[in-house]
Image 1 (cartoon, rainbow, N blue to C red):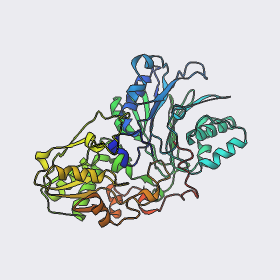
Image 2: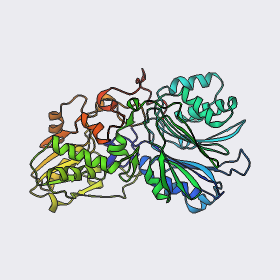
Image 3: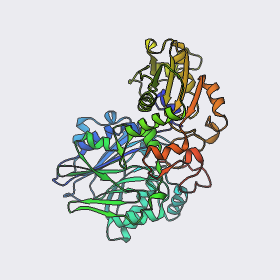
Image 4: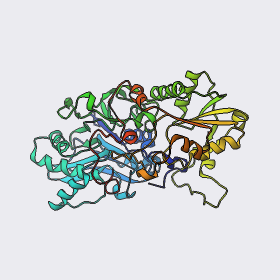
Length: 479
């Protein structure tokens, strides 16, 4: 687990990463557009970020890039962006799901090889990364990072030497890699997007005037003033050139085999994004409505744990007729470098992050909505905050089923024995967190949330769309 994260969020599943690409056919610099796109994707990763750009009319091997540890607005300023010249580029924000968090592992990755230069931005985790990496090592490859993204970049470069074009090299690489990935790849003259056949990770296309974009979420397209064109389909490779968008669907699977990460809709994605035709905010409202139908309770007010619990709380209130209220004031200035209080101290990470509006909850029966309980280490503190503020009862409702299994596809879920639901019943969890009642979203409600899209429920059921690796590789190589 990475402990550089904001204190209140250390009991949440870890964010993934965000990728963003741009290609301006009129030849204008696009580094600032990538910057704003990454800024809109900051919620997907706060550890490191980077931008790589190239001039499609310039020398094939020349790439301007910069990447470092920190938030987008910490790593880049106007002067640094002005040094990045090019009309094609890719960017990345990173949250490591395991292993080292350092500058060497920041993306995009830049590969110089006989055909020119590649820049690769990757969101996801490969389940066969260890085997592929070992094969590359024995063939003479020297690795500079500990991320499986470098394995992807190496294979694309190697396949490109044997193929007619870079999109065919990406296709051949997809024949070898297994697991979860959304890729934004910059070659000297093309911008390529690719999505794993199961659709674990989102990727979409946008357009502004004569510039095309690739993005993990539609909210970043809005940030740069681009119109949403369409989603990249699970298994699809799109190649963006001045001659148009080429599509290769040879890796696509039937809809019933697809396995999107349901936590994009529950927690990860920004509520103003749309993923595969589903509005994230609407999905969260629906989850709250389902909770109200399946886990009703008499109460005076419904409140959400900010920010991801708010939409589900609104849905619960709409369905139940119980008023929705704001019970928490969130301190948005507690950042990555926050010094966690010592255990012996009276200060609490949660109390520093959240404060309760006593007038809202005093002498009230409160329904508290959150998106998940992972370890349970903050849920009890939040319940206590409400009771200390005078709430008569606190009924907790969770807009996801209980976490019972680890994730191998790019979500930072702890080992199974650390998951509170693994060795506790719902009643035991309720008692441990100090709530009066506790209810989870029913598993069968998940497909209804997303209008029947194929989803992955492995972290709830242990039934993964593709077999889990024999050994837990999450501590080896990560995105």
